[in-house]
Image (cartoon, rainbow, N blue to C red):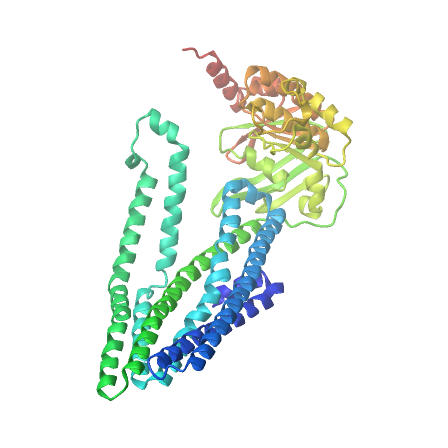
Length: 579
């Protein structure tokens, strides 16, 4: 029941609704027997004395009990659904709160699609067990107990038969779910095949072009085989106990008839025996339904446990690798200093090793190096994406950990290679950089970012909705809008992570002009693969294996003939290559 306690925590303010739901479910279960009991009395009257007044009285009582049962059952479902919907809502709210407070490293490592799926889908997966299965489980527990009591009241032999049938069924159900990890393995196999199938469908164009078969996709093929093996294992485990369970339920009616025949031999009247047979034959189906509800509870309990495990694992990921912030509220200068900084994403695999570097305020720097050398890591550490492993990182004379989080967010603008725009107007996307800015300031930022040609493409200009029908933006155009957003933010420190790497020549020219507006009077750290775009920076920093191996202007480093000269020569050779 630990899983249920964890679920209740998320909607504790509505717990009375769940308590009332379970209470109404228990009352409804007891009331459900009353119509059958009076129906039995009617049968006895009709096959015996046939007293019209008694039959009418029992008929009215049957009708009244049925109405009461329906009302209490509906009240139970209403209360359980109120609790379930609040639970789903609160779980999503908690997920959103963790998302807003999550470390930058979480967003660096996790896609928005994965995060949305875990929060949204798993919150929904808790609905069935709370709204339906939990109230039904009360019915599944109370129904056999009430049936035993009623059976002994009607006939001691039938009572014994019901006790044996219930005990036998419980043993069968217990053996079906004897493996506690089976459902977890099943859910894992199902998730694998779903995710791999989605990946396969996303790549369907490549598959068709190269006439590839599903077997060539090892992960998908393996997930299909694993899922089929899991289903086969589950079926083999269920086979014998489920067949025995079904046989036991179906033989219940036959045993009732045998007892009825024995009752006739004991001088019971035909009416008494017939009413007894009809009464308990009816209950055999209801008893079967009660046990089926128990089976569903076991399955959905496992689904709910898996859902909350995934959610809370995600919340833990969101809260990990957070930077410890302090109380400094102002950034006095824009200089940056690394002092003996070491950093590693994974234990034992350092990216930076005793790295030291001083960057002067209002200077422009370019980071150059091979892939994996640590350039992007340096930029992410300055932005506060990750806490450093050892050493000290200062911005404006203070350790980055001394600032309030809002100070870091406000004073650093980051322009990524893959810029993200929201499905709203171009104007609103830019205004996100500074929500307090005026309309004139937004339009000025768009102009400085060379976005006029983009606005001229659309009739609605800056009010054009990104993602709307007929609205298509190239990678370079998206980048310019992102630069306009950074210009509007007017942060004193700018980080450009290969921001023009994938642009065409026309967009490259516009982006470089936009950069000129963005970088004016700012401390700029630029990560660039296009070496022609960094010749006019104040200093070029060459990074190799997490160490600073060269620094200086373009001319100085070319004269030194070191690693930077090698990069320039290779870049020139690549540009001279022809088909």
